[in-house]
Amino acid sequence: MRAGTGLKGEEIPIGARILSTVDCFDAMATDRQYRKALPLDKVIQEVVSEAGVSFDPKIVDILRRRYVELERLALSSLGEGEELKSPAPYKVERGEKPAAGFESTASRSGGQRDFLASIASAQQEAQTLFELGQGLGSSLSLDETLSLVSVKLRKLIPYDAFVTYVLKGDMLVPEFVSGDNFRVFSSLTIPVGEGLCGWVAQNAKAIINGNPMVEPGYADDPKRTVELKSALAIPLEGLKGLVGVLALYQIEPDAFAKDHVRVLQAITAKVALSIENALKFRLAENSATTDYLTGLPNARSLFMHLDQELARCKRENSTVAVMVCDLNGFKQINDSYGHLEGDKTLKIFARLVRDVCREYDYVARMGGDEFVVIAPNITPAAVKEKAVLLNSLAQQAGQQVCGKNLLSLSMGTAFYPQDGVDAERLLAEADRKMYSVKQQHHAQTDPVVAAAQLAQAPVQPTL
View 1: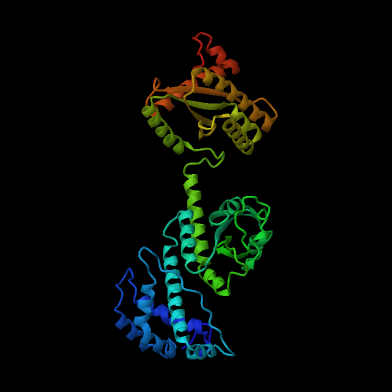
View 2 (view 1 turned 120 degrees about the vertical axis):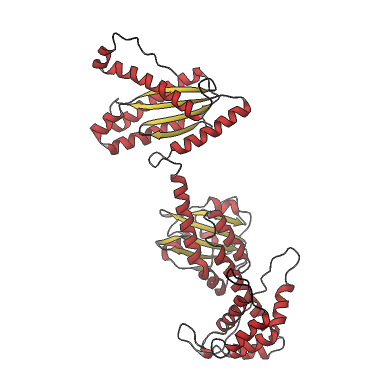
């Protein structure tokens, strides 16, 4: 009997010998995707055959004599509608060498019951960690993943508050919070290197029974409802470095033990990987509907929202205006000042438009220098005022970047239902009216175009 670290026989810690035996027994006695559970009698025969080879003969002998009783003990802890609860924690005291604790514990009055309970506890820990490992990665939702971790961990480590901080830049931001002082922890942002979790993030080391009061902003927050006195925080390191910090808090001082650190260390790699995958999925999901440059919804998101808005209008018999806006003179900024300055101009204009629109208006970037505003229940008179305002914002964006009045705005508007009843028709009509305004703008600013249109009827701007 030899451990992977080079230990053999009684050099191997008693807890490890118990866990390896029980874990093998449980694996064979549990249903798997590729086979059904083996009968208990068959399982014990297999375990006995490995006594002295893979497992401690003393532990195998006790398990052989008591496996039926242990199974019944585990099942009896299940009440109707209840989950298997963690028994009280047990600590195996060792003497000068690991084997000393084994014999002295078994020989005391009641010691055999304690020993059997420790086996049941080890079996439950192995089962819970297995279930947690199976569950991680089954969902790309970060909330679902961290919720699973919080529920499963509670069976093994008592805690009053659970927080998972995710690293964003040089700050730890709470991504998932449950338990006491929910509002306080949800509002914390912890700089790396500061406080308890900031130290864990900076040094990539766990802290056991730290003081929660040292977290920046925690002690002075009036929303605290419970005084938490101990914390267990452990770094979450993914494939590319630190992902975040997982922290458990207790109202009792010195509530956490080294065994609790061991349990967390057994799962942190998988938790960190699950968080990395969930964050990548969230980024991909957002980029599918968000314009990378301005942060506004993109064309795909625009069509989806407009379809939903039109469905609402049909139900409520209400109206909506679709305003298509195009920046005049934007090409001149790109040609004269470069594309980086052009991108900066678009970002400034997008922010200004978003700031002046109503909360329930929808602003999107259609592409290039073309933007769309969806405004429910707005009057034609208000649209004309909006056109004047948006034109002034375009001029302001150009002035901020170039110091010159190079930009202006052409805008066309289509109303539901008079101009169309579907998204494509409304956008096409607003686009047509926008180009009509744009042609008039070119005629006024380009003398060659103006001369060519002298013989034609003037084009009036249409909203």
